[in-house]
Image 1 (cartoon, helix red, strand yellow):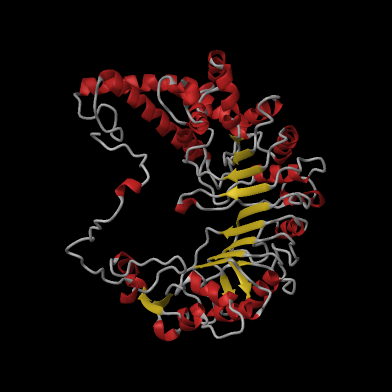
Image 2 (spheres, rainbow, N blue to C red; image 1 turned 120 degrees about the vertical axis):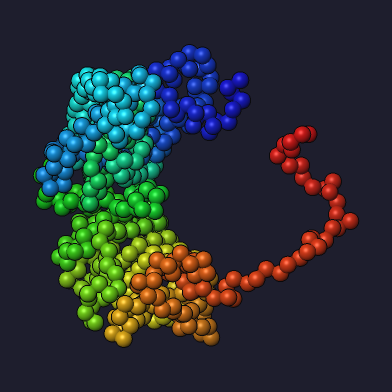
Length: 555
């Protein structure tokens, strides 16, 4: 019966089972086990809390040969939190609140009571009964507090292993034992987000014992133990990078990615600490070899825009490592920052209202360079996000890539005008693109309109620019076309009416190429009414239609 289910569906269902359950299933149907195992263990997800699972799978002779993708989830749980980042008093308050909430819940359920958990225990009851409820809650907390302490200690013991030297050793040994491993991905969770390996944590150790009296999830525990941080950790990334740099590392690993959360408000990168701050970290000359075998590299890095001397952490080292990645076919560099600036925030007339992340330049020694000005012979796809470039920088670097065909620029800051850049691309007969996407571009046109003294408190929003028109202009040869940025439309917007402007149904036309685009009637044609409906074709051959897979009700 089970053999009739598609393997992908069976693999998803069985992926939630533990090893003991899978062993029981193997006793029932060994043939099914042989078919499902490659699907179950094709992708494995681990964190520092379940790193032993990676070691066990890598040591298993049957499972190690089916693993193709490793997903490592960073954990920002520090067993010794800094006083400024998370004072012990705050941590104690969070744990006390969690303990009292669980105790109240259990007492309320036992008594069959209904009430608001935010209120004090027994509120609304007679005085003698209220005292009894409070006494029961305190007695319940006496049992719960040791359990929570044990859970916290178990997380602390595992988090203490999150050092570059330990992770380097684990990944180095695992990579050598996983011959089919091709993709390694680092993901970044927020404190209260579900972890990829939460189910395994909840069914083992102290957390499972606590779950017997209260269904507490792993991400609920981490939301109390793991405070939100401005700088997202890079423990796993640094350990993987070091393991890939080893001379005898798995040469089959071709994909290395930092994947951001799919939630729009959680899209942040990791923060790379300087090597000098990591005593156990290897020397820089070893790390420069980490990307040499990669064909796909996706970096999402958190940067510090308030520091002019140290904007991109590890920028020189990353540049040297990228220069040796001669097999790259796809390169994605997303630079994010929690710092935000707005027009009219007290800047002078000659100061930029928007600032991007420095791109770096072979002629500009004041800014660190993350992207080396070298030719990548196999590179065909480039994605850059929030880079700050000059016209000469972006043109020079792109013209050096002989096989570049797909280009995406998200929220780029150009120290110049896009009209001039597109003209340079179009004038180069060897520069040809199959696809081009320019999302929310900023240039000197924006700066000039934002800093005008006669429009204080008001700024201009750029209207959208068609991606098809941009691509057609870039690929044209011999002139004759119209540069799409020559006739870009602008809409004057008042900062005090900005919220109403976005909520207005008529102006709710959000563009994928600018922050807010201008609403024009020609963009929204009025549909032509057809009261008679579609015309019926008497000669249409219904019998010639292919049978639908959808079962009709009542048939």
